[in-house]
Length: 413
Image 1 (cartoon, one colour):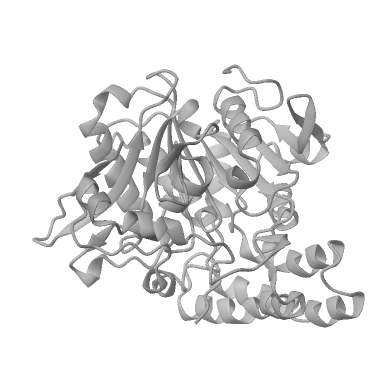
Image 2: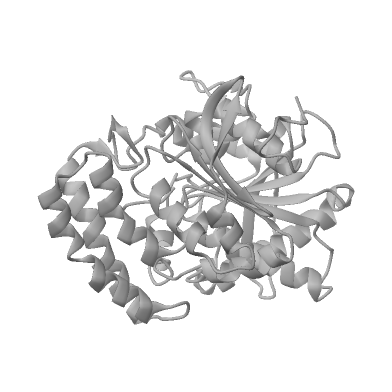
């Protein structure tokens, strides 16, 4: 069911990047898909057991099959990253990561070790997926894989595309969209909108100072811009900012307690080979270590990948506030690449599953944007069948058609 390996570092320290790997329930030649959960600092086991993994955790802490697990269409990897997340750890504090360059290098080294361990999968199509703060991780990781291939580093990785669900990728555009989305969804009044919107120019200026490599300026931008989100949170009270149709319960607005109970069982830890490490769904220390990275714009690396026919899918559930579809749509439409004009002018098409509209799709060339109906932040949890169908069609190159294969932290999961 799972594999855990220690990746040998250059220094004599104990360092491990933990992952689960599930062979496809279909064919061994199915694509290899890696999933990254955001946070920053939230374990990918959240997705494994609550979203698109092979199993869910029952109330009695047994495992039950997920009829819509993404392993039905792919060979599926879940990895705990950055270091300090989930069961991944290092005994050297120098392995604490603060930026995407270090994280993407770790993930690239992980892939090299994975395909060396499993060479039979190296020829398969490879796709990177994830959600939320992975809107930062994924573009950087995809660029690192692309660069490694071009430079003939190690094992060639057959990168075909990447998908980001309800991600944070271009903060300047996405933070500006908060008041607009909140007003459109009836979460705030026009007068409240006008008051909150006055913060936006200051946020935009702060993000510009942060750029892609700022340090202290990026921390300042984080605090300035999050006053926009905090103001809306105060107004909406106990609403779940990951799904505005629901109440917020607990520090993560969802009850994931069975996950920690299950993964902290002695028998489970022994089976996974993780020793006495206590599993925590989301690490506050990793979150804090990444604060300088939060407001950096990761959209800048995507156009080069599009120009080289790497497929990009941005999807978002319509009821998520924190990484809402409106902000994601705006940065996708504003991105400068050779297909921009054609993409912007392309018409929306219904994304249908079982004859019913499950979303609205906009595509041109290698770029697609999908707004998913009746879903919050965690699309594979809220709309599991539609999410699996999305994966099948996208990896087979037929997204628009039918499947070819039957302190309280605002963790950005």
